[in-house]
Length: 82
Image 1 (cartoon, helix red, strand yellow):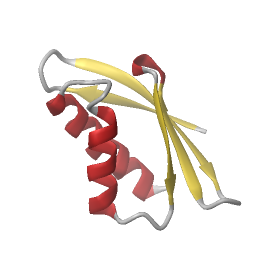
Image 2 (cartoon, helix red, strand yellow; image 1 turned 180 degrees about the vertical axis):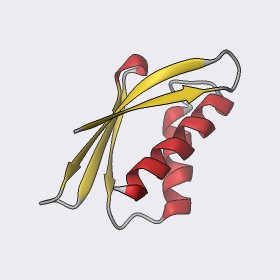
Image 3 (cartoon, helix red, strand yellow; image 1 turned 30 degrees about the horizontal axis):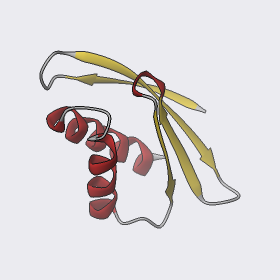
């Protein structure tokens, strides 16, 4: 498991701990942000643009729009570098 710090500059500056767990047997990555009570499972084959869209909409239920966009982009970057 990896823990990344997401420094959000949109609106009020915030820092979230983002937990990334790679499940190589199932070809998925579990992403969790406990501070906003949010998590998602991402398949390796998910397309990058679709993934950004999916994460952004899911995160908007827990965070402001700009904050959700910024966090989604950071998560996609981390997941695709694994």
